[in-house]
Length: 361
Ligand SMILES: *Cc1c(COP(=O)(O)O)cnc(C)c1O
Image 1: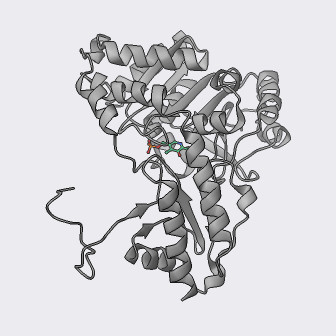
Image 2 (image 1 turned 90 degrees about the vertical axis):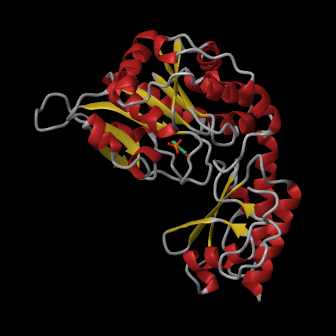
């Protein structure tokens, strides 16, 4: 933003002192140190495999997740889509939770690009049980059915309110997958949040999956990018599809450097976001008209219900926006706040005060 021109509230054209943006952990801007790392990045043509920063990032993520190889991709959506495409053929089926990102927020790409169909299961805050999955697997003996090829799991689960997928449930699901010869993909857009919150290492989660995708541009604070990881053979095939999908980038090391910086400096600090999310949740839960169980908050996402305010979530979000606090809304009465690198403890306390003032006046 231009420093000479203060931001204005479009409706009232008065200067806005400050905006506390809790819409998503994707709104973070690269820190000065991250920008420096980007400026200084060594680069080359990554389509030729010659970008040292991209190669370093891929190696780092492969090591982090205990996989043979990794691939830098443009977005979390591209990461999930490349993995779904690589694991399946058109006409096959992918088991996924009903609130999951690829099913809801990836623009129909799994149908359009991979030609698969989803079998959705309603989980408990995004967590499916092994028994539900086993029931959903199609018999291979009857050609009426679309063969089940893949099980997708999301950890942490976004629509589940940042819910951590319990490791023991993943292990049970892996046993089912092995019995039926089905692959497993981890949408780990926020896997690092799960790791920081539980102390479980990324490699401990990743070992149960054939492919893993992590986002650098969510809580980790990089401006762009995700990385997928798997066997060398899997990543080689995904690399072909990445080119097909238009995701072969050239001097992408400038972006990879931000990702490397994020993995080195922004993982442990996720604990602050989790703490801030708890403070936000506790604060909001005391406000009249808001329904929220603060104990349900496990990472950096806070979902709450505003039905008792007598207003829709869209109306509440609009009202709060006028006062400089941004949340997202979905459905008639659900709202979401996400803590991240660019909001401080003080911002959170201020946001709670503003919500209280606006809703209780
Ligand atoms: C954000 C997100 C993605 C990927 O999103 P992009 O906007 O394409 O980077 C994938 N899965 C989950 C769970 C997410 O929250």
